[in-house]
Image (cartoon, rainbow, N blue to C red; front, side, top):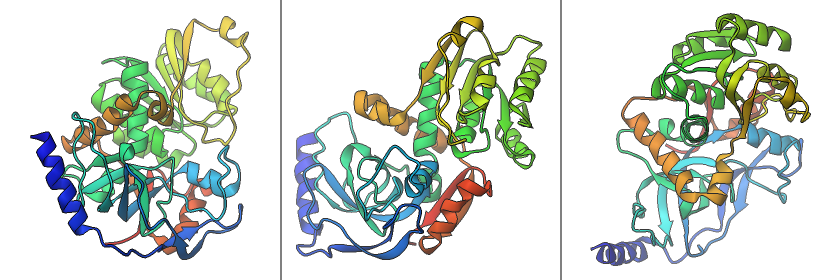
Length: 359
C-alpha cells in the first residue's frame, strides 16, 4: 500500500511541477558582513536534487544565530552573497522527496510544512530549497505563525530537559535568559510538560512577568552575577537547583554553576551574552558533584536523526494538544528584516521574532 501511495504521489508531483521555473526569488541578501541586508532578486537553483523540495515561504523566524552570522560574530562564515534564515514555514510547490522511510509521513506538493533549514539556510526569501530530512508536516490545528515559533527552540529544550536532564515533577530548575526564545521554550517545557518548579532569571525586570505567565513560580532580574546565586540559594533554602538550563554564557555561567545542587545537572544550550562560557577543570572539583551537558539540536541532526525528527514532531503535537504555547514577540515584513535583526542587540523584545514573507 505504501508503494502504491508513492507511485500516485510521484505522478501527482510530475503533473504539478512546471517544466520551466524562474531562477530568481525576492530575498533579503547579506552582501557584506556587518552591513544591512539588501532586498533584491536572488538566484537559486532551478532544478532540485534527489531528496530536496522547493518551498513557497510564508513566515521565517529571525534567530540569534542569524544576527551573529550577519554581524560576523558566528563560527559560520558563509560565502557571500548569502540569504540567512533557517526556521521556515510554507507550502511545498515542488518535490523530489524520496520518502524512503516507512515510519515517516510522505510530504507532497501542496502540504503545509515546517522546515529547520540550518544546512542550506535561505529562509529570508519568497522561495527556498530544503532537504527532506528537515521538513515536518504542520498539524491542521496549528497556524503558520505558531508552527514557525516552536520548532528549533522547543525541540532543543525538549531534548535537553526530558532526554538529557531527565527533569521530573517537582524538580527545581533555573533557566537563565528566561525571556529569550530558547529560554521561554525551556520554561514552558519545564513547567507545563515536566511539571517542575521553574526559577526564571532575566536580563531585564520588564520581562519577568512574561516568564511567570509562561509557568515559572518565580522570576527576577539578574542585577549582577553574584546576585543570581544568592537569590537562587535563598529560594531553594540553600540546597541549589536540580537542573540549570543556561543560555547566557559569559560572566553569568560561573554563577549559574554555583546554583546547582549536589548531583544536579547543568545544561549548556546557548550564549546570549555573545561570550562563550569558560570553565577551568579544577572548578568541577570545588563545587558539589554535578553533570555538565551540552545541548545542540543540530548535533542530533548529524548523529541521531531519528531523535532530531521525533523531537520536532513531539513539540508540534504537544502544541496542538495545548500543553505548550510559543510566545511571539513581533511580526515584521521582509523589508523590515534589518529592524528585526537589531532586536537582538537592543533588548527590544522577548520570545520569537517573525518575518512575514507572504500571505
